[in-house]
Image (cartoon, rainbow, N blue to C red; front, side, top):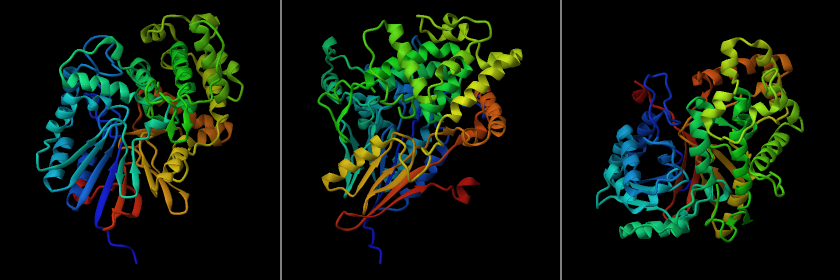
Length: 501
């Protein structure tokens, strides 16, 4: 007979509230979360089941999606407290129903716990923490807790944390943040020696992904990021090669931040860590190169990525990307501004409009060959972790006496038994994701090409709706009177008939 639950903890993560909405119902604007209505319904539904706790396990809001009014427009970290508060207020004004729902949740004597992720690290700043409480409407009698400083959270024998600590791209310098928060709490200026270096993943989003997203909305939605997004983006705009090479160089830096053990960053690993989940993670298998110039180093890094992903046929793929009659040097340069790449490139969208079938056919043929060199994608399987660093970290954390380890960060929901009675769960995301049609990898050439051509055309023209996958997943933990988890389930929110009507 199942034990009776004394309380229930619901865990969600990676809401990514941020970015402007589109001007029309069909436009995505700059958002990856387009389902705030369902999120509000979920919160109101569980609020009626006290005693209840809601844990938002990181990336509740997305400061990286908030455009500024002056160049460079995208900031990897907003250290100015007034500016950060203004961004949070803009997010709250845009998605007011969500914050009101959190206030109602607390009013019904439930508990709300919020952890930071890697897209909302500004929340650790004292003024921004106060602003968060204000936009939620937290009152003195409310049961509310905000977890910061890289700490994990315990719910009985379950350990909950965002998971970016085990991603070299997205480890956060919490020691640096503590210095800044200490100074800001006293309204003191921040000396240059205390400058905070954001994770490389945040730098990549602000400097690379967001400018590309102005033209290609799929860039932070398509999974898996490296295997699919890099060849596809190079096919759409060969001129992006240099900007991707710059990212590859960042990947070499991120590789320096290793783990001493699966769940233990090396000394300084949380201090000078250079590293998205929902960003183009280039992995940790990039070779270390000798002394080279900056461009040579970037080019070597990108070549290595392409060799790894394209089964050694990178040169043929890259040659096929060059418009007919162009010299290789025409696509490579030292100016890394996105605008210059777009101006110099002959992107797929331009080729489609000009009906240059010869170039389009050659490049799509090369892209198909590149994608079919991949293994079938299992990253969407609920019982398989395609990134072992997360399951390895979870297994190591079980040594602390936990029976359940819960992450977010990857946007991929999981429930995997690591040892008898011991589980790794990932809460997934309430943001949109996209998946490459599996038939493109597994089908014969003719059938795969029949699926590839319309997919690439839709990516080029921004017709993404039919490819969007929305899986509003959450984890439900039932705890007994002894504060032990007696049930842990990965569930998907299903809208009720009343909510739909």
